[in-house]
Length: 257
Image (cartoon, rainbow, N blue to C red; front, side, top):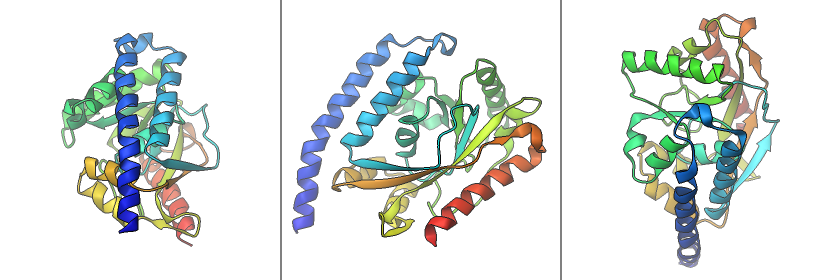
């Protein structure tokens, strides 16, 4: 009963602040360029600050292991929850690749499309080929890209499979990739195994439930492990996706031990 009361109070305090920061974002985004070619560093910096404030309002504490390598061209990560984008974008000046459905979401879809997000329809070969070309264009513009090669939200325990299709974007390109492992621990710092509750809500696709659950907690922790960057010129492209998945899984297993 006490825990429920605390959760209700936290949500009552945080929800108005969340609405204010979202409205602020909608206003700021009006002044963003329509073309990604016209984006400047300040536009990415504003996004990072906005995401940082947003994550603090909903009560997320980020623990960083390793160092973000800002010389990397591409970042890949396991995908655990809809919160991943907020958490990663508060640290990295990147454009995301997201499923096409998100583009039609109220508010979130608008914000994502205005900040340079690339949208892809799952399971569509022609869409994948188009996305590969768009990724190459971003690389040539020196824009950093991040995507989730699992293609969908996973359990948060391990990566089952990284799909290799979009890695064709790095063929014949001198691209560096930094893998990132995301873990929402059950009870930081004592229990670092993944939080089944967050994973279950995420896999069920209940975004509102996830936000309410997070905002009702005094503090939620997420561990971001930035792993060693790889230079794609050193490896066969066919091996890159498996290598990245293996490194992320190794990092996640270390947290379980």
